[in-house]
Figure 1 (tube, rainbow, N blue to C red):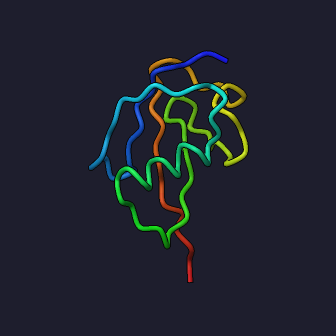
Figure 2 (spheres, rainbow, N blue to C red):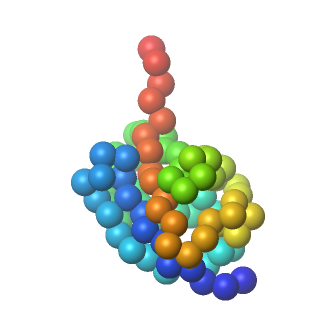
Figure 3 (spheres, rainbow, N blue to C red):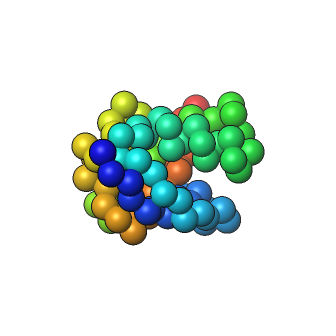
Length: 83
């Protein structure tokens, strides 16, 4: 697969990075790299959302299969559990 340049940011937009990813990377790969690189809380579940389509990229879906395009913004959002 080919590589694409995307912007990854946190939901509160305090962290943002332009990165080159392989389209075979999964949603889980992107989330894990973001948690590691930005020292995000590890006791929180996250989802990955394409701001272009508004769709959540499932952890097992690849970026290519999720129709992520060059220049898209992917947002790492905490999954809030009502309790």
